[in-house]
Image (cartoon, rainbow over all chains, first blue to last red):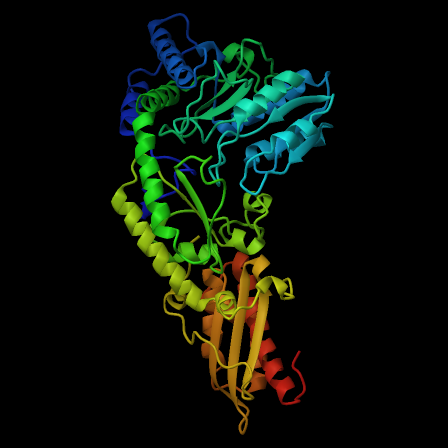
Length: 406
Length: 132
């Protein structure tokens, strides 16, 4: 099998989570002897598969305080975002053509909105504050008489900040705007209760909550009822909202992952909060270090820091015992640094100097301690190499220098 | 992205890191790039005024591993060269030596620019004609 032969310590839980062993064990029988199609109504193979799918639907609904009938299976959060945004825009386009979203959303939301602009919709992309949070007054002011839909993510994938979904939803309700929330990074990390939250559509995924990749769901509210146009047509599965044979094993895996999250998240998150604090304590005294995103209103799983005058990719190259990610342009195909950090108003150099460390269920104290040491060591080494650090130490303000762009 | 062995070697054991006194008559300094673009290179040469030969070089670089390696490599290459020879170094030679992928070619271009800037700085100090 062609997999990487060496395994750095995994601190990239916002990219994906390892699948919990209990999840894998729950899935396997549905790949082996229990292979039936849940849509087969005429024999026992289908009946047992359907029962497994419905049990998982209850488990997913239970984690977010929803009715199982409000859960529509999809292939993941990207598809859920597409289905929610295109589906609601299509259904409600007779009422208006204006959509509101935020500049720090995931590309699955931003690119879907771009596509709708191409189709004639108008989209407002709102700025966030320096702490990554949406200003409610700015949101309220952006709503127009023809606004039909708003989409705001629960937990940001890069900086981990938690938007005030209850307050934003209340504004949407008052104005009759359909409200979609991308909760891919939120499930199992924060409490979600759809019986209380004024949210109409919510995107969910399994693999950020220790489930398998390739399965997700869209919550579609029944009371008050929200309608969406299907984007995938076929056999009329999922009450016509998303056709396609249901992957029983994937669905069972997502159900089990969400069951575990519901049972264990209270204790697990306390442990992760302590690890977060340990990491923060270990790194906060490094000179010229900046935390990206609000310090309290964030999930403890995420620590996004900029080490000024050290370029992110070179830092990642140095801390090769850690699997982390960076907002540096050099880690992506483009030469632009992270659009999320830019939206916070971070300077380009601080965006280039960022490191995203995301931890989770299997992170240990020893791993945190190792991370602190290797980061400190490499930041110091790279600063010895950095002409910007030298200028900073000489008291030169680099923002006053005329740099030739290249 | 996987790095070539030579890039990793220069990154882990960078050659000729440091700074000369900018005001020294025998020193030429080139600073290229911009923090906003994620790359800044400072390259310095120390020239023997009698022979016109580069006797020593230093660099400091803010940038990715390939940018660090490109500048480390050129500090080795320029030693023992005349100003003309140093200014004639091509980014393609740097990119080839380090096996840089296409997305990292700009690092080698920056290193070439840094040498030219350092040579020009020395020539201006000594009222010599600039290289292009």
